[in-house]
Image (cartoon, rainbow, N blue to C red):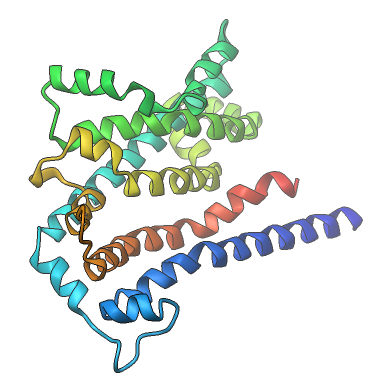
Length: 279
């Protein structure tokens, strides 16, 4: 009974901390949203005030829709983010399953090697990556961004998922083998559903850096037809003059998909974060 109470208390505390963190994290988003519907003077005069009859303005959204191809930028960002997350989760889960399930000589060293990218930022190799993309003809393509983001997200995915894979019951997997299931079916039908919270955690941790990244789109895909949303929004930021109405409006429109995906994954994310604390 005492153990159950402790677990229940730990779960409530974890949920409370996550809710508090969410409120704090969403406050800047709230400020951006309310200011995107205000005139330029109102933005600087009362940045925390809600828009009213005098300050309400849609000039920022009108500017965004007229200048540049916002919907193309949005489409490019969605393609890059969704495909990259899919590849990260698929290959990361497969590598984690192999490390957790099969014991072989050098297993630990292989795991450390695959997780090495957590300690070494991928941006250190920007010059080498650019040379590689030039030699393969992938500059100014979405494929270049997808490959880079997949490589960037795999180390963390393997590191997190391998620990969850080790917690999957061996009896369940052996029962599947006795029933004649192949290793692929065991992986997709038995193991993946059980580590779904961890998959959601990995997806959220990788989703926001990919969606908001400016560095690699600026270097690898600066062409107009493959610009991402973050790079396309830079057209409103000048050296001497910045159109803050357009910038805030573009950011507000860019935030919505991330919030939607966060809401979709939130329940699994909470389970993934708290699962190790309530055993």
